[in-house]
Image (tube, rainbow, N blue to C red; front, side):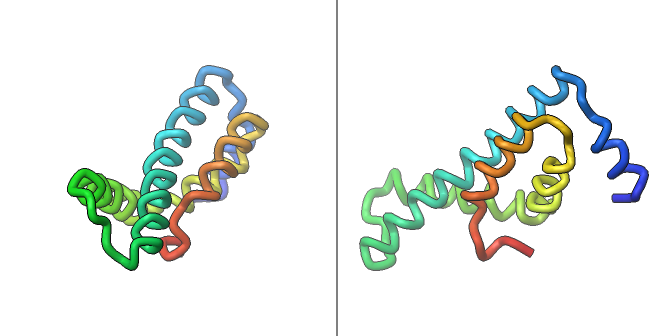
Amino acid sequence: MSINDLELLGRLDEPIINLLLIEIVRIIEFFCREFDKLELRRKRLGGVLTLPAEQRLMGHYTEVCEKMDGVFREEALFNCLKIPSDDVKLATVKCLFYVPLHQFD
């Protein structure tokens, strides 16, 4: 991202765009949060999820989180903090709470 792009983020203050960004951040949060829930459950169960549905979901959530990690999810989220909207910043901070720590670059 160039310095000009960062300046544009700082001036981004269109309500409809901010709502769109909030929804995108919430989608990212959903997958990270659900991965986190199942990962905690897996650890409590001694490293293995016993229910087939949980195993399938964990596979999906892991795949999505790894793909988001591969396309610089954290960088995009941190850039959202440069947007003037407090609502975008709040959604972003909530989302960052659930990003798997081992995926932070």
